[in-house]
Image (cartoon, rainbow, N blue to C red; front, side):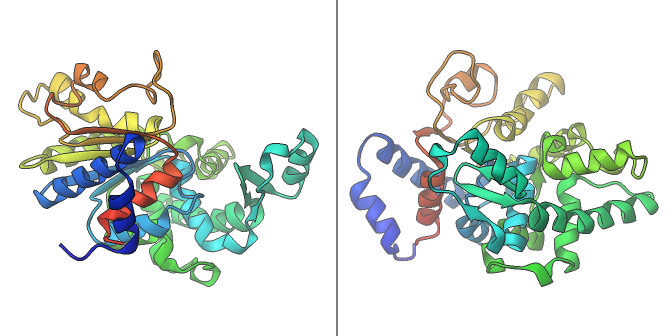
Length: 325
């Protein structure tokens, strides 16, 4: 083990109780899981890319501390938007005080607000649109079909965006993932900006819906990947937030066990969720980990952690620990 960096030393010294202790326990559990030969899925909900999680997640990918990612279509594209349009973003620290009229003013300026950060439509969305359309069109003309993230990888690796880079490319987790060809699952991609744009081309008759592979094809691909990667220590599940980014991939285990009748398929072998959802009735995001035992997702003995806090604070700290920062 390399010597701990100052951030890691601070966490170990001060994070002793309550959510702080849960953070520390989860980080050490993640570390142990990898040390014993396990693999890890990280799921990204919310707007973690706009929160610039790539500053730590990119290194996690490069250092083989993440083997597969599940994310929303928004997180898939917003990391690339930050890569090519960062200087055009605007921060609105007083966002809680904005009136509806002021919000409308942001819209008229082409600024779409995510909490305290505004994504510039022209420089971010439209800058990507022409480049990703090129990939969709080339595939369709060649009679080929790919998954949503594969088109993004092709766009990044083509070099078409390099002239627009506005941050250190080392801080783009999507670029790090593309360079390693990291498996990504993107459930519900259709509701992202690029998904909406693709739908508009289909409605105009310029592209066919079948040119982009579907969520069912993501599920069947993930099922095959899980069967091939769940031996030994198995695959852990590190969930940032809730929603479809977590719910979609975690279901692959009960699907294989119950519907494919693979009775020996291993459960997820580590589980951690960072969530600001209060424990609640009927909410997936607010469900405690033990509920997942009854759904055939986790075993009785699966190490389980929940950190009830802000993921934009907690995830970079856990990643800092794993990176010895």
